[in-house]
Figure 1 (cartoon, one colour):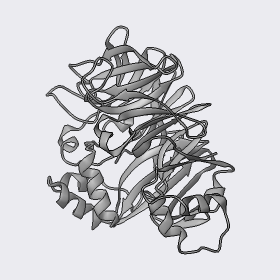
Figure 2 (cartoon, helix red, strand yellow; figure 1 turned 120 degrees about the vertical axis):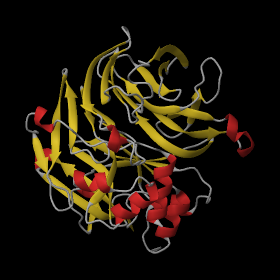
Figure 3 (cartoon, one colour; figure 1 turned 135 degrees about the horizontal axis):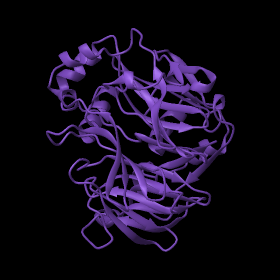
Figure 4 (tube, rainbow, N blue to C red; figure 1 turned 180 degrees about the horizontal axis):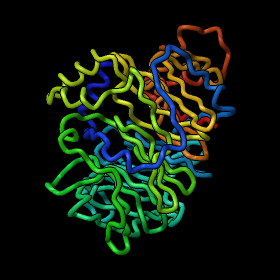
Length: 398
């Protein structure tokens, strides 16, 4: 079942793999940690100390993919519509209050003057005070004033080198680190670009793209760029390290130690061009593969990866020399629930210095809670009393 879900993920969101070259150009990483599969259980209380449960109200919500936690509001990328009959006219990004009340829609999909064709990524720009959205097949950045509920700027990205971007992160009011996942030309191409929206110029390029491998495999992933104060960290599937951009310098921050679970480059070059055959070859291999969806909170980097046909949760804290993999989650703080599905029950959809946001689908959680009805907790009662088609619940952990 997990394997089938992974197949769907890979086909729905395509991100081309590229292996790193020129590692000798980097100074030694600040930290080096190994990752290996372990059948351990992550207790939420080991990394969190408090929480809030937020029920989304007044609108139908589905398919939450990104949540930005601000001081008094949540910016949520999801399908939000007032009735099932009007689902196609629903909002793609909406604003909710801190107690879950629907405030207003901000962005719609369409061809109107303030609408977008697609959304690839979004981030809150603390430098400019705007919500910045990478949209229209990764060719534009739209900047929205949330308080005025209006689009205030449209910026076209470089169309000769970047062409179609997959992620953005502001490093100043007018400069962005831009992540590109596809190779598009015969020129030398890169994964990351430093782009100035005022001049329209690329100021720097990082991580050359190996096009032979970049066009070979596809892995669905999100959140490749993580903002940590004034620093931006980058990670993508099969990279050898977590990289850091700070004060104009790009470097390896956490390098993954090579061990018997690391995928050798020679193995990747021999894998099949066919996606399904490649997945089968990786599944049968002795290696960890498909490490994706990395988030950061309070010293911890959290991601998921596949080993054999099982999905594991990786949690590392470089400063504490902490690196563990988990095959189960014990929510000992909120629901008193245990799940071995580490990616689809507590779905990580956002993180910042304000906390980590998981979504919980009531119909999924009900099946877990039914296994032990003796525990008396208000959060469990709330889930058990909700309708099977109730909105996803936000679980904010601190």
